[in-house]
Image 1 (cartoon, helix red, strand yellow):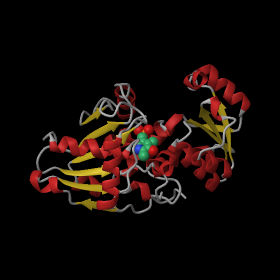
Image 2 (cartoon, rainbow, N blue to C red):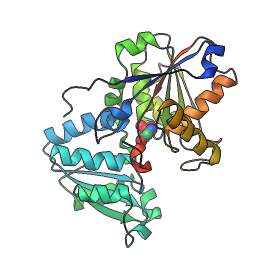
Image 3 (tube, helix red, strand yellow):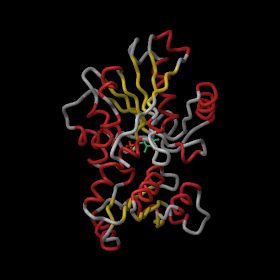
Length: 295
Ligand SMILES: *Cc1c(COP(=O)(O)O)cnc(C)c1O
């Protein structure tokens, strides 16, 4: 399944603003990399699953919120690859309720769902919690929340090809935990710069991204989500924008990651904050599973 990276399509947009600024926007449709393991999660899981298999683990375990794209991808990948899977889900109040589409699909694929309180969820990456989990699931290969670790970063380096290094000046990507963006930084070519739009508020990403990329590269910036107010928050303007991009340009976006990033990229261009004539590559990282559009 991971033996060969599928060929990924490019979508050229012709927005009115492009001709004014001489800027061109191309979208790399990573969302189409696989029929069920969507977007950047395919690249993030690749080397983790290969390692888990080679070490003889029979289960994959990870963490996420109720709509998590990572949990969705993990459930599919585990099923396809012959692992059992366990999802530790934030929010013990969800335990007695009907499952949302993300979780019911994960469960139908065989994922065992364990709901924990928000307080416990915050402790999920502490040593105590990890020790306890390992005792309960000795056969599980544990993947951090959002799937980001060194092997995920290595996988995401493969999202950029040599042609991408030559053909584009600016790489734009939505950021959650920073693993994907770090891979792109590592794979970026001479003279390229990268802009990340975080789905969250705060500047907590600088440190992990520096850790995954080394201090050698300074060709990147991450902007936090002060504009829309933080993770999962969106408004009518963003919804209308997503609707328009889908109808008029056949570009399906969602309001957590890609929709916000695309909106904010266009705002930056309009404000003159991206150099005239730049050839932009926008990474469509997926995330459509939770929003009922074609995946
Ligand atoms: C998970 C996800 C991201 C963020 O990836 P990180 O590696 O956690 O930064 C971006 N876009 C989409 C659609 C995602 O599902």
